[in-house]
Length: 140
Image (cartoon, rainbow, N blue to C red; front, side, top):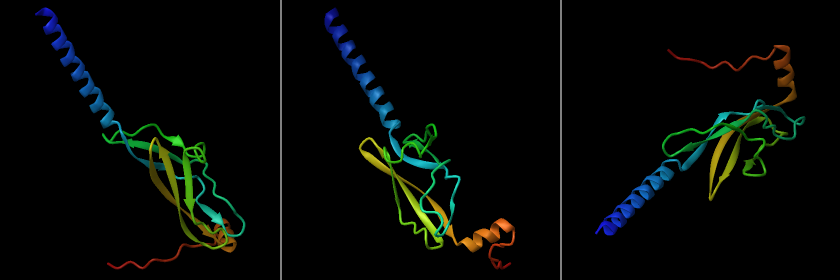
């Protein structure tokens, strides 16, 4: 009788541990990544610059329970577990979306930021302090 009770108790204890640990694993499942800091450089000069610079950019994982994990630099992951997707034309001024595809176990998550390509004349005016942003009309 004692053996039967101890086996039943041990079985119930095992089931409780399995349920506890499976619930914990479910709560820490990664559900996405977020951009913490975009790259230091987000403005490029048309026909002068030819490639993106990711220095300074950091992202972090977000768990199902809302927990945010430690930030990490994307420059170390590019080509390994981070793929870059963009259609930046370094010869044409404009604003472009840069998408990062973070590979995590069997899933992938997208994070994006925007960069701007400007013409060399605008860049020189900005550096000389002559450039003024466009005036936006406001209505009261």
